Image 1 (cartoon, rainbow, N blue to C red):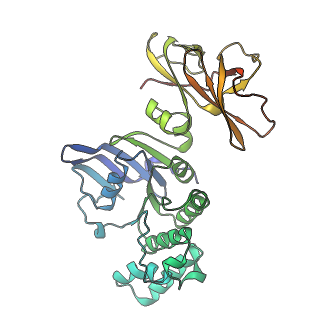
Image 2 (image 1 turned 120 degrees about the vertical axis):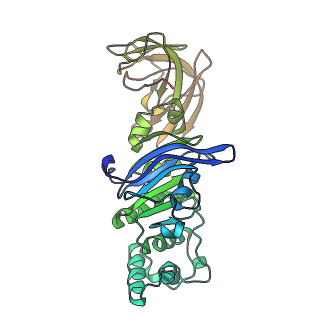
Image 3 (image 1 turned 90 degrees about the horizontal axis):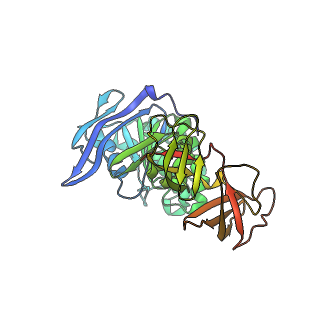
Length: 365
């Protein structure tokens, strides 16, 4: 995945985009700016509005209000066939009676392109997706990953300005999905097409997209790179939705020179300041499991150290996962790499766990 292009180069933008279905507000005032050549992911749980937003970009749904600009042109009122956009569906929608070659050529023939140009484009696409030797096979003679590449080649053959992917890897099993993610990104980036994808799979979005929009109840809660979304979530929902996280409720005790938060489990010191918050303000601290140390002996550091009892241990090969119960009743998840040693910690052990001042993220909503 390449770094995202500069945000000021907005090629696809939505302005105050709204979609209502009777009384249901499916998309609620969405404003996005997507750069030319960017792979952009809409990520959220079922019913969050991401698929409706994608269908409005494709022209399959009309906005209730707002604008969709592609290269500066408002396309919100254009029919799907009038837009320089192609959409690849989760089912791939390949024609079972046509060969790979003819599936890729299908849209080009409907456009009435000369036979020579059709041949050139199809052969270029076959080389791009590395399926030249399978050009005469039917879809049922291909693996799931190969079918996915045919569907992608068919979408790219028409040279769209914008490629829309609806759960592009959803039909593949987990191992094949992981193998195909980087392959798909390399193909899209080699063509240079702007791409918007919808997924509910966090790993898929994090590994494929240069930027991600987290959606909930029709709204975009945060837009950022995968690192920004994971390391600096802007609200409790995003912190809890992406990966695993431990959330601690508390009240701000100091607001300059590094904040301190009083929680039920004890005081927590933060490297970040909170000058814009008043002392006593209710806040939430988000701490990722991999940022927490764990041992049966108390560490040397004097603060952000807590004690609890191990309730569960999961050995997951490269790392181990621990669930530690605090005296308050809260359970804390901790992950520790198995690269250097096998942990002596056992079920039921009394343990200490700790984190640095920089580990917690302070959330106010």
